[in-house]
Length: 126
Image 1: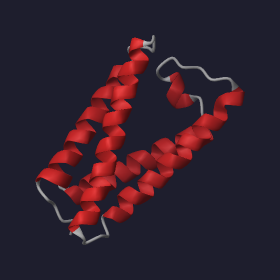
Image 2: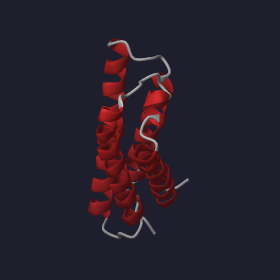
Image 3: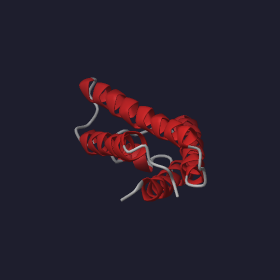
């Protein structure tokens, strides 16, 4: 694994999640027992649009050569995934399904990977 591979993998997974949120808005929330009324689909559409935008940032981050710019992208993803894990823990404390713990663990791992490959190693994407 290196930062380029991490950014590409992140782009693919994030893009896929965004498309799923837009095309089948109830699928991802339903996987953790959250069922939305059709009127709430707009929230999934907006989140899906954000996910696709982050996928573009992740993919095109592999084209950059400026270390500070690359580290800023990595920091953005660290904050995104860490904060998402934190609010998912909060959601669990408010009654969300225990199924959410898989996503929490994944977010923590992804944050750790971006810390290691994007910040600690002071990686350049080449």
